[in-house]
Image (cartoon, rainbow over all chains, first blue to last red; front, side, top):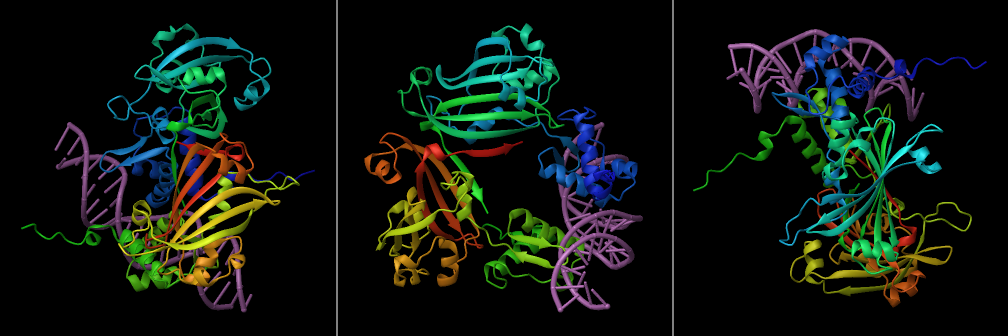
Length: 245
Length: 245
DNA sequence: AAGTGGTCTAGACCACTAT
DNA sequence: TAGTGGTCTAGACCACTTG
């Protein structure tokens, strides 16, 4: 028989255990995005550690992008803004030349049976269904991005009642307000392909032109998958900068 | 008259000043890449600060990728390995299917007058010249990447004496050994284009196929530009993953 | 003025590495 | 065994924000 190992928690340094417990409390909704968590003195006395140890735990979460500190005000749960993150890959400019946030248009909404890869990515059970959105993003009336979006039906029922015209330009605030689902992190994979006839027509390019695909899995604070998304855009607006060490 | 401001250093916290001074000493060559810096007790007594403050300075440099710590052994100047960093963008596999480091072949070497953008990127004076290398990277004898590389002639004279066949597969160790130039960080920009006839022939794809361009500026520890490089590869081997928060 | 995070101290003890 | 970085303490004082 395999001897039972001690819980990994006990082997970790205290500041790691504190980090994990703070994440757990955030994931449980004890502090909502934008809210201040307890003060350092409160937390350190409650946990029975010195302020230095507690600060080190918070340092980790700040480095991970989960918390932000503001001297004299407090420490806050950070609300990520992923929709503007498309600027990391595409540079959208309006007719006036200024950077601009694309608007959104829902083309189609349906409840579907997920295929195997989607079921795996969203960690769904065998009978679970998904809500599928087809969406376009526009600048000055021109389609710049074409998106397919899938979320689990369980937890997102509210999306099936809302008129497509009322979805607005940003989905994550909608998820939070209507479905109490908070996106905390995401993993994206970039690939390059060539536009087929339909994609070329949608994006206003020529068939065979290179197009970028961004495939995203969004996770909540507990690491549970919340949304899968596949975004297509013309490659001529694509540029990505990275610093390496 | 504009009142002279105090040096920004004095306004910074001590741990930031310590960080800056350690970078200065590394850039000056006091500790070479791979070498251990002084111990924490030595440094903290020499600087007249507590160990906690010194550790915070070192924490910053570890987070920046400049130093690595090894418990029981010491703190070391990290030697970045950029050439394997192409794996972040391209996935090269040998015939056996295993990931493989491409070999290199120098096609051409010349001393040239830089154009304006290159002069600006390398921060060269009006009369400075550059060494230009054209290079191919191969897997199983197939060309997978085509590179144009420029370094300032001043400081890299040794490259003009070396037989092209003796350059080896990795340039940065060569820069360090022959020219005493150490690459510490780099900035890369990705773009997508379509292969012209010549690029298609080189990379073994069809004209019009999408190709990736990675444009890199490499810097030393002092932030001085050391090398400019433009790498082209077929887009079908391209994949890039990123985690966002 | 009261409360928050930011900086810094002067240690102690532990875990790991090399000899 | 000696020396290194890793963890942690129990504070002090500073800089900033808010009422």
